[in-house]
Length: 581
Ligand code: SAH
Image 1 (cartoon, rainbow, N blue to C red):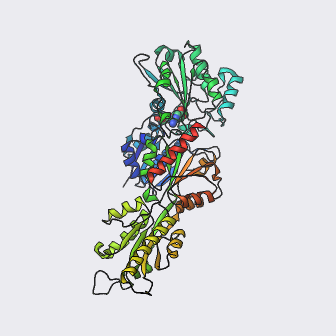
Image 2 (image 1 turned 180 degrees about the horizontal axis):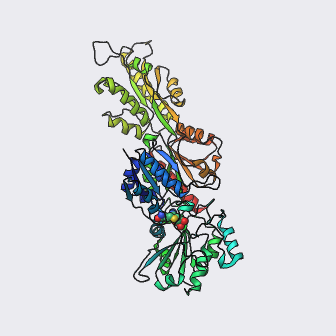
């Protein structure tokens, strides 16, 4: 049976601009063939088990050439796979989407197209530039600024490219795309760029006179390295040198920046701002509106890229909240929780006589159960309820470390009996010990006899195999407590993933990492072994988490309270301070 190919637009970067249909298709993909310009957040949605083929990456100086991409799609479809061809922005706009379909059509491979939000419109919008406006313009034109690639192209940066152009004048046709560090054309591969073939003198083949005559908004994609050539072309064609123009860098992401100038000054201003690809050029009166319409940079977390590491199954709520406040979020599950199965230690605690279905447990009465994380609650409950009825827990009292665990417990129909004043292991241990001591004292007071044997309280703590010591130490101090500290799950480090988080951290592109547990910090440290983490600020939910982050060499900030709300506040606070300094 043949498979099928979906040509899917991933949008310009911001996860929220990926379409619902694109998401559905992606989540069902068995093979994903993707380019370099896909937003990290979209990439993290590629299913773990899908085969991932990166055709945008330069190995040496070669990307996969277009023919190879075409045949890869065909090959995988003939294997019967559901293949997603993921492209930046919209797949048909300067993306050679059409050409990728030809081979499929020839071979009768079924396909679907899922359009995407194009950078040509979304990036101006995120900069407060409406591409048309009745008072200014009634048309908009999208033009490629990419030079036709020739056999002897080599990669050079924009500065060098423009220097070459100046030296060689407007006929600097040998200048090539700025593809290396900045990936100007990433999103399309070298040969996959739709280029002009008319061979006009500046090598771009643009009919500047026609463009200027339209008086429309002009949007150039892939034009950063040829910016001087384009501006000169427009000027020669008679555009007013004072026409507003803008260069918009990495729009809709945390790296979004904007240069506002005029046609005559845009090159200089762009150089001064050291703008890098990807960027689009907008020429037209509408650029003026950015001053008053710009909005994205006003969000509290604008310009911040935040790494979120949590156990895989917990991810998402926090990410959505950070995104709503304007952050670009990279979700990286550093650890995965794996239940310990079978678990004889735990089974011993809940053994009953064969002829009874519930307690008393032959292993001894259990007075308290202590949960130190929502994951701990979930794993215990799922295990317990496989063989028991919830009523079998009647009589046991429940202590939780904080709101998250309490909420999880409620999902199983149980309300907690105890929560500490501060949500950390040490406080939980100390305050619970205090409570138990008070209660047992009261009991012994009532009996009135002395000397009385130390009352014996049994406390079960089902938790991570690498749980912290503080909780146990505090409880042990209380003396009369028998502790059953039983590991119910292990945390495993996840190293797979197609995003180069390490590289981004080292380049200073990731500003904060948000941590909700010490074990996650340790998992993260493991994955990032050897990386210099001093450039990243760790925003931590509590003291133990912070200590773990400090041990990894990260600058830290701790939430006022160990709740997700307070953690979010701490992130916003950091951003506000950064903005000031
Ligand atoms: N199909 C894509 C365009 C591919 S051509 C789309 O519809 O958006 C690649 C060019 O798109 C880049 O050189 C740059 O000019 C532009 N581009 C893509 N993403 C961008 C972004 N986030 N910010 C600025 N320009 C972007």
